[in-house]
View: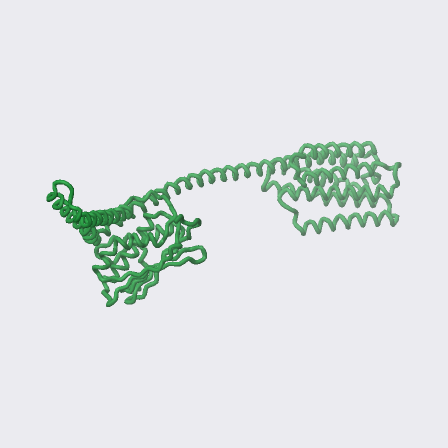
Amino acid sequence: MQTVFWMDAFLYLMLYAAIWYGLARYRSPKVVLWSVSGIASAVGLCVLGSRGWISYSLIVVLGQFLMAAGNWGRQIALRSLDGPPSRRWMVWSGFANVAYLSLSYGLHFSGAPESTIVLLFYAYYSVNCADYCWSGRRVGQTHDAIGANAVYWAGWVLVSTLGLKTLALLTGWGATDLYEVTWDNFVVFIGQFVALIMLNVGFMQIYIEKHHRAKIEVEKKLASEQERAVMAQQHSQTLGVLLLERDEIIRQLTLSNKSAGMGALVASFAHELNQPLTAILLHAELLQSKLARVPNEPPVSDLPMMRSVADCIVSDTQRSASIIRKLRNLFRLSKGEKVDMRVDQLVREVADLLQPQMQASGILMNTDLSSELRFHGDATQLQQVVLNLLSNAMDALIEKRPRYPQLKVWGYEQKGFLELHVDDNGKGIPVELQDEVFSLFKTSKSQGMGVGLWLSRSIVESHGGQLSFKSEPGRGTVFTMRLPCSPVPLAS
C-alpha cells in the first residue's frame, strides 16, 4: 500500500510538472500556484507513504500540512480564473484549514488512536472537496463547458469516494490503517487517480480557453483601433481639404468684398487720378507749344522753365503710378503667402486710398503707430481687415454727422501680442444688434452684404488672433484686432 502512495505521488508530480511546463509560456501566477500546490500535495503523499523511514509524528504533522496547503492552493487557483477570490471565502477557507490541522495535531499529541485521526482526515476532505463542485459550476457560467464540467465532476468523485470511506469508517466496514489493502482504500485511491486527471485537464482547458478569449478580445480591440485610426486619417484628410476650401473661400470673399465696397470709392479714385493726369497733359502740351516755336534748340532762357515742366510731369506720373500700385495691391487675389510687415505702413496704404472720401466728408483721422510694431501674416487679407474697419468707422461717422468727426487708429505691443484699435465717435452699435455684429449676411446697411466683419474675424482668427469691439450707442465704437507679434525683426 505504501507503493500505491508513492505511485500516486509520482502521478501528481508528472501531471503538475507537465502543466507548469506546458503553460509556462503564459507566465501566469495562477498556473504557478496550481502547479506548486500540486507538487506540495505530491510531497505530502511521499511523506504519508514513508512509515518506517521517518517518525510517525513527522508523518502526521508534515504530511497533513502539505496535503492541506496543496489542496487549498488549488482551490484558490480555480477561483482566481474569474478574478481574485472573495475576501470572505479566503477568510473562512483559511480558518477551516487551520481549525482542521489544529484539531488533528491536538488529537495526535494527546494520544488519540490513529483511527480517530484517519476518520477526521477523510471526513474533513469529503466536505472540503465540495468546493471543486462549486468552482466548476461557477466557472462554467463564463468559460468553456468541457473544462468546467471536468472540474465539477472531479469534485463529485472526490466527495463521493472520500464520503464513502468516511461512512465505512463510521460503520466499522472500513480499514483504519492507511496502509491496509482493503476495498475502501482501493476506492479512495482510484477516486484520487480519476479526480486528479479530471481536475488537471479541466484546469488546463479552462485556462487555455480563457487565454484564447483574451487574445481574441485583444485582436478585436486592435482591429477596432486600426479601424478608428484609418477613419481618423480619412477624417484628417477630409478636414485638410475642408480647411483648404475654407481658405480659398476666404480669399475669394476678400476680393468680392473689396469689389462690393468700391462703389463709394470709385469717384474718389477717379478724382485722385484725374488731377495728376490733367497736370501731365497740360505740361506736355506746354512743352509741345514751346518746341513748335523753336525749330532747333530752345533758347537758353527757356531751359529753367522746361526743366520745371519736366519735373512736374515726372512727379505727377509717379503720383499716378503710386495710386495705381496701391489699388493693385489692395485688389490682388491673395495666394496665402505670409510675410513680415509693419503695421504703420499697412494702415497708411489703406488710409491713403480712403483719404479723398475722408476729406469730402470732413473726417479727421489721427494715427499713433510706432514703426517698430510689426506682425507676420497675409498682407492682402490683413489689408482687407483694416479696410473693413476703417470703412465701417467712416460710415458710422457719415451717418451720425457729429460736429467734429474723428477717426483714431493706434496700437501697441503687450505680452507678445499686437493690439490695433480703430476708434470712432460715430453713432455706435445698437445693443440689440451687438450679438450679430460678426454674423454672416447680417447687416444694417442698405447696400451692405453682411460679409465684411464676419470675413474680418475669420481672417484674424486664421492668423491666431482675435477681433473684438466695444460700443456705446450714440457715442462711438472701438474695434480691437489682437495678433501675435512677428517673431523676427524687419529689414529696414
